[in-house]
Length: 323
Image 1 (cartoon, rainbow, N blue to C red):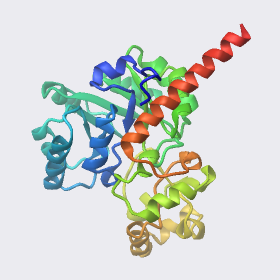
Image 2 (cartoon, rainbow, N blue to C red; image 1 turned 180 degrees about the vertical axis):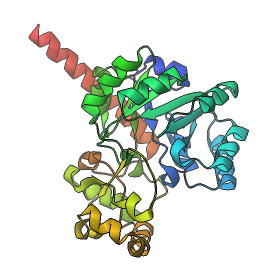
Image 3 (cartoon, helix red, strand yellow; image 1 turned 135 degrees about the vertical axis):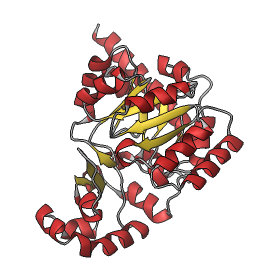
């Protein structure tokens, strides 16, 4: 961060023990200890994804994060896809923040509080936000449908202020379609206290993806990120209320009718798994359209902070000019 640029501090920073209100999404196995630690060291909140991560690997990754940084970090679990052993590993390790999504479990919130963890809960509707805030979530993440991977059906611009109004005074963080400081500034104007970014952090050297994955994001336009239920239907995953946003690829181009791919789901599974492993099926959001380079995660956090401050100052000058 430019020493002369000032600070971008909101109340959620003090709550989570961070310096800048930038959170890195807990994107399953698309996160690494190195990515999380780099974000934390730069003043943001890095979050390790617990989904599809074996308990012993999860423990080792948490230990590695603690070797790399002494700053607060989070671990994410998807409530509707919960692995009990992975959850127990997380509670044994007691990260400062428990990040949750896709299902509200009040008992889980209470257990986290008793363990001394802050609860950051992602929602896709104002109704779910009220439920999560009522259950005791410390921070609500309002994720719009522009995001990558599993998303809901409401756009970020409409969802964020609705969630802010629904859960006040619980702090809200915006997610979905945000990849630069302008998006963070816009989120603050909508009433959020920060932003959570996923796709943008995949285009960093610390993200545990290959060059093909990163290059696909950098080369994509926003319209290349399309949402459907193809992935969940073919893999026979029950993920209520979600669609999956991914970059256009041969599978999605060839299979355009839900009835058709559902009828052939079992036969399509090997081809889909090969496409995922070969990085031909890239989960990414509409923010791909404004990502044009791979940037180290720590530098990215600092750049995002400076860009957001600059955008807010431009807005202030515009208002002054109108007045």
